[in-house]
Image 1 (tube, rainbow, N blue to C red):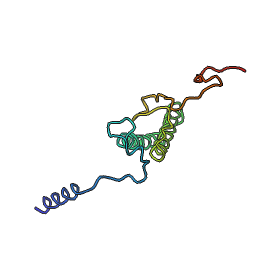
Image 2 (image 1 turned 30 degrees about the vertical axis):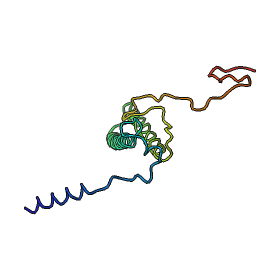
Image 3 (image 1 turned 90 degrees about the horizontal axis):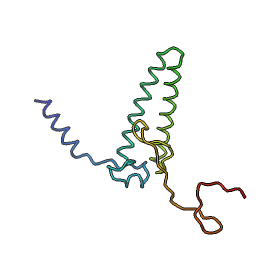
Image 4 (image 1 turned 180 degrees about the horizontal axis):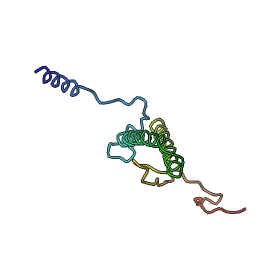
Length: 132
């Protein structure tokens, strides 16, 4: 009987809980809807998954002998740690620094020009290099 009362009480407390305010996350990131690719919800999931994966890989590495497999796992750990740092930077500044995104970095970032640069004749500069 006490367990049921305690469960009911905990359910009421959870229902009354307010949504998180995310004071340490940039306003532009918080403004994105949940279905957006780089929304807070998605990025937090990627962060959690990668932290768990790094922990698992470090455990495996400690148990392995030296060799090719160990070096491959160490490289994966380093890549995931850099990805985690880039996620933290994104949440702070709303600037995505990584070339990839997704839970396992399976998607490649597509670049978009926000402000064009113009040459002396008024044409938009392209990626072709000119020798002067």
